[in-house]
Length: 580
Image (cartoon, rainbow, N blue to C red):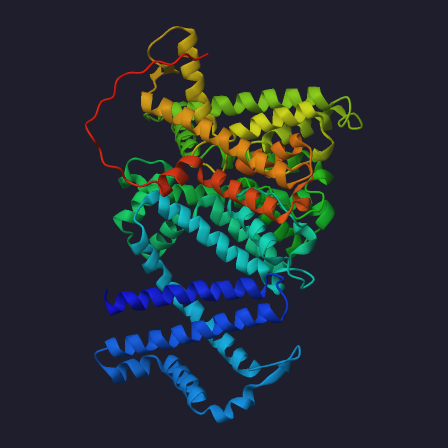
């Protein structure tokens, strides 16, 4: 092993230990023992810093140049060694703390220096991770994990909360995961608990999680004129389910362009809609942008304590939020294909220009048809189930508006204008089914996806019609795609059942509410019957893991964790089982 590789491992160890200290110091872990552990880790980081500096000093060809470029490191190492050598002056650093004598001044000095150096070492982390994995699924999984971890640390800071009383590690992790995975489940009131900085962090996590960190990184590289490696392009094409890597430039630019156009337009319209309650000013502008980003990314975070219940009768708010949710939930590929089709059709029919019509793809047709079918049927069914009770006190127009809006949010955006905790069991069952289905593949939505449902429907129809080929809208569906669709359904159902079983063991809640919560987490919906804030620590961790798996997809997780297997030319005898 080379000296440079050892230095890189030291840098990575320093980063991990620095993150651990930040978590321990802000995780509501108090007491003398906890302080001693934090100080011991700080001291370990210091020793690693000193070792790293000595390694690179030894490796450098020109010692004088190294000393000039690393004055801070060399000065600290010199001071640290001097303190150890001249131990008779050590008493200068000793102070009383909770009845014990500890080197408080030295610890503060080390902690400040370590914090600065850990931040400076973050840049080296990307090189370590690049060497760690070149698998697209692993890269995507690690990128989301890194964003969640960074968001957790930021939300743990006292300046991220309104009253300065930090919410602890578990709640910060839950909130960061919910935002990054664009879910919307909350354990604390986002409107009142977090400061402006904390809300900006949450909005940033939603934007990163909605678009995907790989897409943002690619777009940033494009703006600064830096070329991405082939491995980077493969990872992004894997995320977008795009086979042709050559189309990434155009595809990424369209994705970011569509996102900013929809979010900006939504923010302008919401600014007008919120004016009645928030008035003019920066606060209304921030609220409008936050809810626009949250809606388009299908997150469901709201800055009102009652979510959007106060806007249940506002046609503008309901249709703007619904439009953003639908646009973000049908995927960028469908948006691009639909836009191209309508643009070319407009040029031919209205402008009378000779223009080749861009046909709607099979994927676009399935997504648009299934989405419309679910929205219409869901609106009618929710109205039917709730109009005699929870919707009875409102006018007929508001009733249908509430039923429509709640159906749209089941596409994996957890806004609500109805009190979810008071709905009927039949309504819960219907909502669980819709959340399980989710939105479209390649979008901000979760669930098994309407594309998967379309493939399964085509297969079932072929069985009933006694046909060998699976045909969907005059297109044959491959066997591999059918197998993948059923595998996704099976893995998703297994995850939901397993998560519900674990929560049934750790929580004292009705099973229908637990099943609703777990399905909402898997589908990255964010709707809750009200039990999320009351979850135990193990329950919050279970929901966090389900949100993470639901955002990436079970197949991505399995692909990332699986190992390459050797292919053997072995054929086994055909077996027979009695089924059905």
